[in-house]
Length: 287
Figure 1: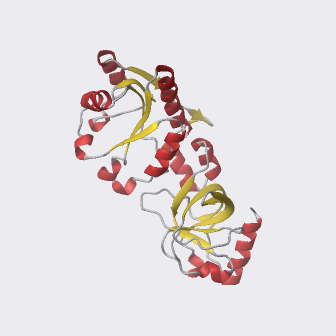
Figure 2: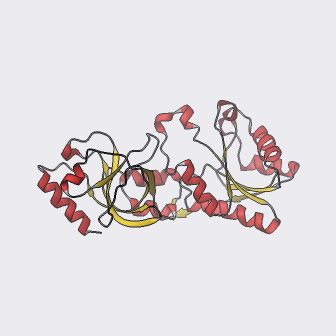
Figure 3: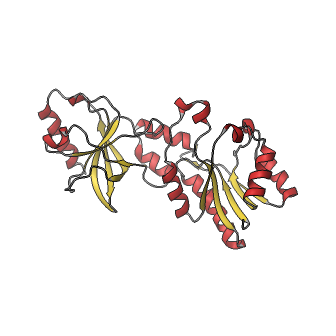
């Protein structure tokens, strides 16, 4: 393989601190005729160790798309027990050096790797001197006096604080999925909706109604999206239900992207359908 400049990290959300790491690796690669790579994993090790705790901001496909827009090739190592049991020294030598021919590494100050997370930036620098690669360590990125991190972004999304989450991510938080058939209740109300269900590991904003932008076949439309179970009509399964005022047509089977812009109101159970219709009309008027 051609010599590489590698950005190291899990990069969930590819937030503004991640972007800085990746861009730095890309810049070094361009200046030194190297191949820029962002090296991550196909899933969190927690999926093996504590699967109930895993919630992703971005899908693997979404992460790859964002990384490649930043100018790097996205590479994902397959998480396995063998990989999790690999010593930090073997990770450096067998993967970074032998497999990827690394000549320059960029990572955050708190990057850990190898069995039990025993590998750190100090080890990277020490082994780099012997194995022929340089290491660039970026300091903590701070906004509003607190560290920018994927865990903080997940908290904000779970709280429904979409505006703040978007600032830390550096773009609008979004969910993508295939529209599936529901009970057609929205259509009967005069507000046909696109229903999308997500896997158990996807982070979804707290139950409520949001201003969104929905992209369908490359076109963006202002919309309102309800996350939750739709209690007024006896819903039970967690999903997003999106009404696109300016769209006409059948969306079943189409993949759509829902960008969350801001929180409108909490999800609530209305006494009757007429009250629900009036509220939806008020929600639409806020767009």
